[in-house]
Image (cartoon, rainbow, N blue to C red; front, side, top):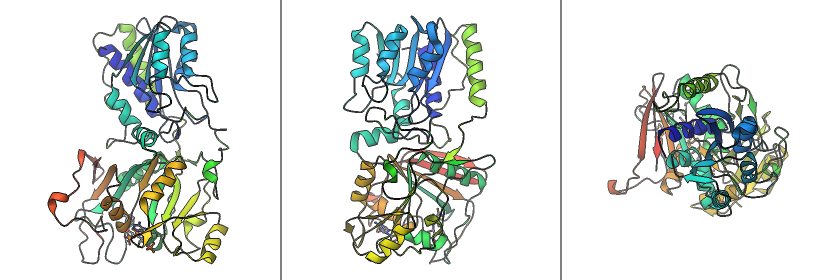
Length: 442
Ligand SMILES: NC(=O)c1ccc[n+]([C@@H]2O[C@H](COP(=O)([O-])OP(=O)(O)OC[C@H]3O[C@@H](n4cnc5c(N)ncnc54)[C@H](OP(=O)(O)O)[C@@H]3O)[C@@H](O)[C@H]2O)c1
């Protein structure tokens, strides 16, 4: 493990991050093949159904991979799925050394690929940049190890912590840069959730919309029952990574891996530096895949109060809409909502509302690995009260709203004693135009 290895592995992490929003339920993976101080191949997992990163990088390297070093952000699979195991491609390429950032957390896969390659005489190194690699696939890691989605809370607030005025107006509290960031979060999430209060107040679409040149896509099937189980028209049928799931969370910087574009370490040859430059140029090119996809839309609506005219029931979006209610919802309204093409999920009740834990379990079963909560106050409060949030993005606009009736960002029950307050960790601050983004973990 040395600076040069760290440099190439950071490039691989950067490549992996390009799959953000496109590869779930697979993990994001990047790979770089290096021979005699030169990058001879690079690859990343682009879409569900596309080749795995190692295979792409080794293909690009061709014969030059022989006796080279393979840097890969996640342990190569040793599992026969819809594609042959990546370990076979690594062996066939004649690679000498494999540098793996993190072991695959999937119990069916853990240690297998690395051990297999070691048993065939390859030099294996693991654990370099492990925390960065885990962070990159934080939703994948949570989902694979717990069966539950990684829950991300997002809200736009005034400086005094209100998410709307007393009359219910909330669009738009924050500026264009913060809103663009929010759409990127939507693209990267498998599903987005709001309460029926937000639907009644704002009639949102809950689609991921980009600025100039943006285009929406969705890769998991269309509106309607069981849509999540259908394979997408583009790309063609998923090739699940062995048991994998994946989500690319953006950091507060909007990038999962930082410092990749630092100059290469001094130990690199002049040739490597040139290579590094070409890599940077490539990273800065507009990416053809840089389009957004819609997440699955979910509404918490105990009694099915949602108006049948709600915009999210009539979208031109290939992403499905799921309305979560309880048995309190009238059968007739269930049928009427289903007739719009949305799926109604009848869930257990808790505190007179949709029970959250069973909902998360159901989403986990449906391979929803990342869930973005977009409010309103009651829904955010309920998830915070039950300690179900993993990460948060709170945007603060430099405006004051005030008013007793204006909702604060967290409704719910809250806490009675300060010593019970949820403590945020790994806080980051970022300026977005005139707004401030505070993000962190719980
Ligand atoms: N600035 C922002 O970022 C932002 C984002 C979103 C919304 N908003 C604003 O927030 C306001 C709406 O917030 P809100 O608090 O009134 O509504 P909300 O949180 O969107 O929805 C709350 C409703 O969801 C239903 N629900 C079902 N199961 C639930 C559960 N387990 N936990 C919590 N709620 C559950 C309940 O109605 P039932 O009992 O009928 O099911 C509850 O009253 C609007 O003014 C909107 O503009 C602001």
